[in-house]
Length: 276
Image 1 (cartoon, rainbow, N blue to C red):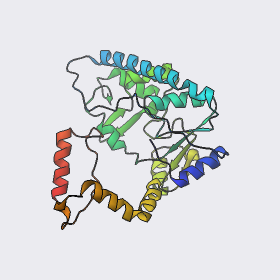
Image 2: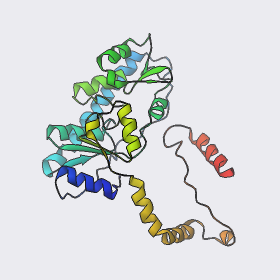
Image 3: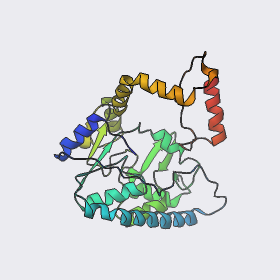
Image 4: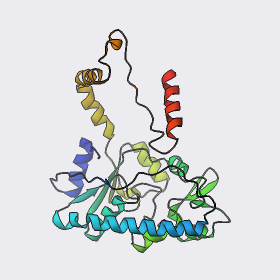
């Protein structure tokens, strides 16, 4: 579920030239990204074959699942986290393109290439080297799918996924830059992020600076800070143990949730932060 800032909402209504209402679509049946897997000695050609059929089957499922949305509703715009994630996101883009509907991608996080490479490193399906013949062919055929990071080249999708996406006419041209493949507009929160995106090769014409989403939420929370504090204290710190103690609430990093650490390692890191 995604909460739009007031600036985002105003911009979207202006871009679509409509006084529109918003409806949230949630991908409840799609499993989150898993951590690294050890495929042992399974040859890359077999892994790519499996990836092709799995990706194609999944995307066709979501295309069919979301088709009724576009036949039963008068949709003016599709608002998504991005334009590159496998699953319901690309399925909605598929229908939007078929029906001439605008796709709008608000920036919800920093677009960090290093983080995305972290999810692909040490996996031969994504690395490009002299032994990866399929990947070297993709590099020549679709250069927008390749990034160079820390002395190595990586594909955004593996060969099997690329072939599946291409067969369904859903292959993003420049997935390393979010909002640079299928988005009609990419709503950047600051000029600095717009400049970073442009330096990375993002098309200038579809970037609009709207302001920071979280500032709206922070301001709303600031106005209601006493009520929020009271509800948190009542819910989590209502025992007598905290009657004479000061309580500090800390927002913690999501190492485990983003597949950067195992659950035990993430808990150890959090305990270390709290000890400091």
